[in-house]
Image (tube, rainbow, N blue to C red):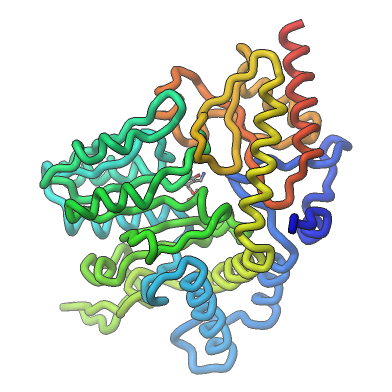
Length: 407
Ligand code: PMP
């Protein structure tokens, strides 16, 4: 059964907004998704009914807030099928989660000359933390290349791993090329050499179901705001044995067992990695977002987004001068493109005046742009609430821009 998109759209207040007196066509979902009312209400409800600092309070509200936060953790656990809620660490988002691993794992497990392997299609947040590690520890960075279609050359990985390789850190789905990588195979190859794997799930969690135990992944990270949740909250999943083995990331309240001026002992998992007051309103709102996604069904979402994607690519291919950046057959719901020699910013600005929100530029993946010898792309990215009519509006907008620039 198909999704009732009109009904879904009613759950997202912002979608009725007009931009320059035109209906909003929001196609920037890879950057952030819009929020359903249940998430917005959860935030209000949290502050109206359930606001008190968590974990240390004996009073009623504090206990209520603590229970809500821990229930949210359990909900995340079940969403990604982690073995234990102790393996679910709340962070500010994907970026902070990767930085946590780069610091805690990197500083404790890596020495000079050790290697971290990433891929050529990583977001800057899965490049720069490893370069910072490089400047602290003298590690080196190796990069799995992709081909002209944006498909990762996974066969290279086997040859790249050496006894000095400490971690493979790759994205599940590319935010620029749409490529969905064969993560299970990558993990299998790395594990055959006893190398753990971190997977950046920022662009996968909103689109298809992820089972961390089935993947046998060591670290998996994602952001709440890309899966219909609030900004400022995200998740680091880590296998318990890894999280136990590596030191805390930040020091402060919550993460300690006992503090004296001579010595401090650390709290157990997951609190060891959650220094300071956690975003307990954010975690409960994220939990509401995951419930919402579960209610619609990730399979239904995935099917709908794929239909949109194929429709968009078919219609857009008819546009003169259309060039798609990224042609992997395994792809998620976004399309990166250029039209003739029209600069992405010009295209984006014209579309904006028509009420169409797309993203333009390098999408925080400059090495991808370098590989294609381009400055940037225009990116339209889809969510469960997008429609074919919106894609028609996009196609008409692109045509209009093309005519303005070429005739
Ligand atoms: N990785 C990928 C693949 C992404 O698309 C993004 C967001 N564009 C990030 C990491 C960073 O996410 P955040 O800014 O929410 O930390």
